[in-house]
Length: 76
Image (cartoon, rainbow, N blue to C red; front, side, top):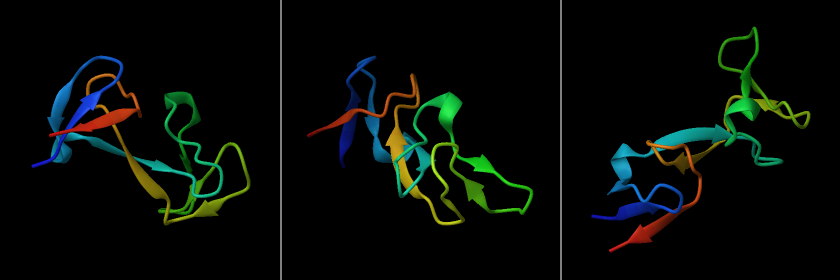
């Protein structure tokens, strides 16, 4: 089992507890809470607040479930 450790709050836990956040595939916006991808009126279509990307297939990256930090280290 792979464990992760947060570089900010020292939280440790397995991969299945991590929060997966949708991010823009063009400019990687999405980790900061005030710069998340926005859902448009069309259900399922996301809009990036930083660039002109629109779509329903964003990338997903993990964040710490405790503090929302995107920088996690794998530990064994």
